[in-house]
Image (cartoon, rainbow, N blue to C red; front, top):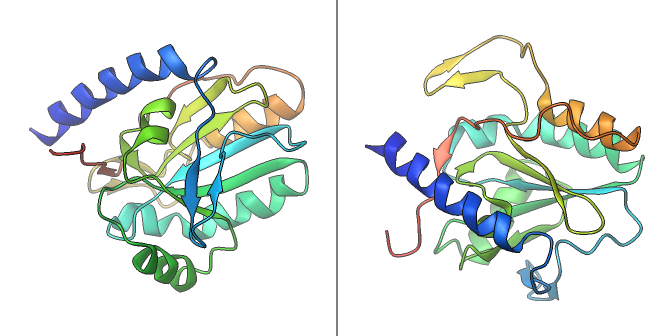
Length: 192
């Protein structure tokens, strides 16, 4: 039932994302200091990676070291990284504690109304959405294939799709794969 619900949410999110990613109104979300920010504002960057995470998702939490490695490596090459918390009801203190506990040194945004999640088309944590400076969604999906199904993981990933997408973008090419299915915890729908 969870997988069917996730797939249904994915289809709805894909439609919503396709309708508003490139031409949508500027989106403003609150960060942990309560400031409103547009997460898709390029600010001189080659790409923006939004990483949808959740403190209560063990798979999401297991990716914290890799997320930090990616941010360190690609941040110095002009790629912005931000954490996004899109599960309804996550309060700023819980998110702040999660950021601290996992040693994240990335900006964190709260998306309680799931506007950014819908715009990006994400349905799972952890899931990455890579936007180009013009607001075009270039890649959405898993960080890598270490987790290949719920409860099933490899010791090391065999594919690193987020890295592959970023390498291609920085080389002026489209990502080799634009969409992959993320494995993790479903983001509950508002009111669901």
